[in-house]
Image 1 (tube, helix red, strand yellow):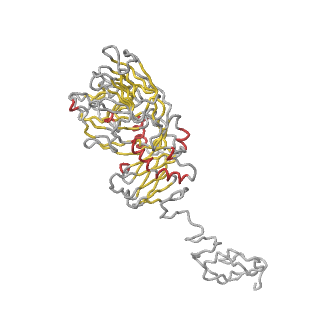
Image 2 (tube, rainbow, N blue to C red):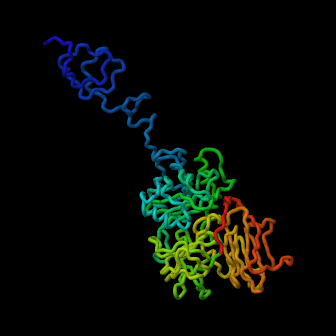
Image 3 (cartoon, rainbow, N blue to C red):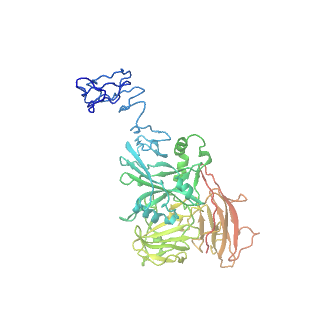
Length: 561
C-alpha cells in the first residue's frame, strides 16, 4: 500500500544509526531510507532532536582527534598527553624512580651514570661503555630453564657448599648491553641487588648471601674453562641489599650472567658510619653505591698478595730450591688459581695441608681433579691431573702424594667463610711458605735460635697450620672474622723434651690483656713445656677497620688431627 503501516518493515535501514534518538520514529517507512552514509558517526549529537534525521552525515570523522579534550571519546587518541601509555620513555632520567615500569628501558651513558632498574642499582663510571641500552632479565636457574648453566653452578660451587637453586626463584640475572664495553683500563662497575625472597626464607641459619658471576677463565697455554666465580660482597645495614664490584671479565657476547645464592658464613656488612637509615629504598641503594670507602673495602678483600687464610705448603715436591713452586700463570681476576710448573720427574703432586679427600673425579668441565677439605674448613683443589692416587674419604697428611700432573698443575685455595672474613678463592701462592717469608696477623714460631721445636696452631678449636723444624719454622694466620677468638698452640716436636714458642699478633690484633706477644723462652717464670702440652689465650680481632665491619659468626669446630 501507499500509506504507512503500524507494523515496522522487516527490512530496516541498511545502515541504521548506532545511537537512536530519545524518541524513536513511531511510524517507520515501509522501505529503507533512500540514501545513507557508508560509515555513520559513532558519536551521537549531544542534543538530538525528537525525530532523528533520516540521512546521517555523508562525511563522518574516520580518524579521531589528535588532541582530545579532558573528556575524550571512547576511541582514545593515539598520542594522548593526560593519560600516557604503558610504554615508558626511551630516554629515562639517569636517576629513575624507585618503582620502575615492568619493562623499563635503561641507558648506560658514556659519561657515567647510576641506574635503578627493577630494584637493582648499577653504577657505571665514565668510559665504561659507549651510550648503550641496558636490559635486565630476572629469572630462575634450574635444570629445566638452562641445564648447562645449572650443572656448571653445581660443579663450580660445590667447594663452597653453596645452596641448591632448584627451589629458588628470581635470583638469576641476565644483563644484556647494546654495545661492547670500552677498553678502558682498570674499569669496574658496582651493582647492588635486593635479596630475593626465596633466599631470605630458605637459606639455612649461619649461611650468608653471595653473588656469583659466570666467567671463562684462562690458564696456561690455551687452557680455558667456565665457572661461576664467587665475588666479595657487602650486605647493607638493613640486610636487604648485597653489593659487589664487577669487571670487564664478566661480559660475554654483550651478556653477563649473575646469580645470588648463599653459603656457610654470615655476611660482611657495611660499616656503621657507612650505613644509611630511613628514606626511600632507592636513595639508600644509591648512597651505598656512591660510598667509595665501602667499595674500596670490597676491593681490598680481593686479589691480595697477602695470605687471607692459613699458611700451607707447596703442592709440588721440593727437589731444588730454585724450582720449588715455579709459577707459570699467577692468580688474577681471570685466573682464580695458580698454575705451577710440574717439576718432579714423575709429575708427583702432593697435599698442601692435612685433610680429607672430598672430591676425586673426572669432571666434565675440569678434567681429572681432587678436592681436599682441610681441618680449618678451607679447601685446596688440584686440577689438570693425569692420574688420581687418592679417593673420596681418604685421609691425607701434608706433602703426601695425591696424584700426578704432566707439564703443570692448576691449584686453587678456598677459605672457610665461617672462620675467615672472606669467602671464595684467594691467592694460594701468597700462603705458601717459601724461604720462611710467609707473614700474617698471627705468627707462631720457635722462640729459640735453632728452630728445633715445632707446634700446631688452633683457632676456636679449628686446626689451622703447624710449624716445621728448621728453615720453615713458622705458621701464620690472617683475615679472621672480627670479635673474640681462642688461640691454642700444641707442642708436637721438641728434641730436648721441652718446647719454647714465640707468638706474635699484628694488624691491631691483641690478646685480652692488651698485649701482642707471648714468649715462654724469655720469661724465666714460665716453665718449658713438654711434647703434647697445649697453651691457650683469648685474643681480639677488631670489628671496624675505618670502612667495613665484619659480622662475627659462631664457629663450631671440625674434626682435628
